[in-house]
Length: 163
Image (cartoon, rainbow, N blue to C red; front, side, top):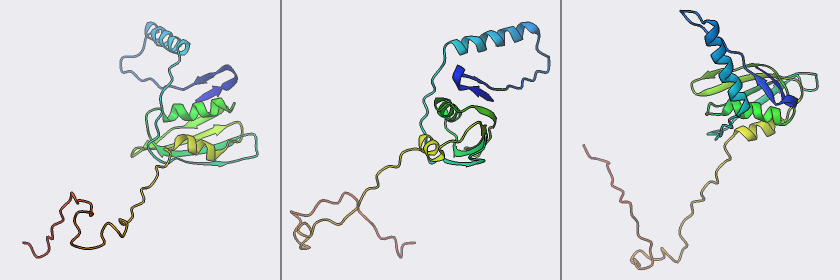
């Protein structure tokens, strides 16, 4: 994979294998479809489902290696590439791997990047935790006062001693 953000261009390498071989007319069809898809770009909606971890090595040099570990959701690779392109960062090479639903991608880029910002972009925003508290003292002030006590919709049964 290589990108040229100034031209808004990215190239992905494909390996094609066919038992019967691929003739020139089929290659022409593949080329025509690729060209048509480049003329009408498709934006893939990315919805992260968990937390992404992003690390980098080689910061401060002409190239950096960025590692991304994240839940492999539809559009993850596109979101990573778009993030780099929007910041004018070229991808020189990439290794893309998914194992057990987790993407383990490695990118060789031509600049430094803010790993915290990329991780936040690829992570689901944390949800607020609910605070559970006891009811105010005046609600459960006396055991016999059912008029002011909230009604419990769950009944708990003791299974101790049952066979």
